[in-house]
Image (cartoon, rainbow over the protein chains, first blue to last red):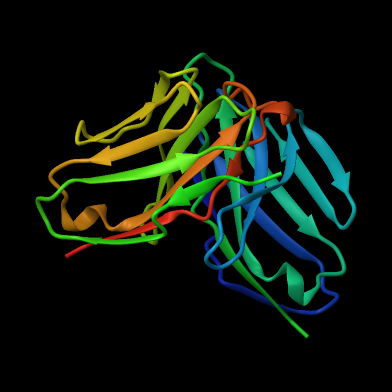
Length: 112
Length: 117
């Protein structure tokens, strides 16, 4: 079983829809949580970062973390065709041997 | 300011050969980490270098190695290539050793697409 499991998709939604992307994890040592966006033929870019349970909002994006359930989500409001990309959740432990552990990614297409 | 530069962008090698990939981080960044991305396994951490020292290593065989120079540029080497090494290799740079904090955001390059035939 992988340490981080991500809903694989692909996901296709109409423009303006609310999108929910989800990851679960098994390692309780994960303390820092990130969402990256990766466009085709590009490297990932950081969208959201959080380290505490609860919600964090940035424009149309909301990251939600529930450490008790080991579950994180990214919500995209008023989705746009330009949001079409692969979304990757990523986590880092709090110990000294830190490394970014990624989910497998969810491919999102927003249809105009 | 210039982003993370990886060279070459595309590479085709034969099984058994070795390959060296290069990564130039953002100016001022001292941490460089490497990742392998495949459709089956996703993005997997290879190793991180900070101030010319390997700080952390993922679960990859010893055929995968790297180094960092005094100007923070980094190289990754894969010896005795196998078909399964075909992947997109990404490097990321950050200001400081990867801690998870926002001030150590990892900026990714566009990657090197390695095909082993």
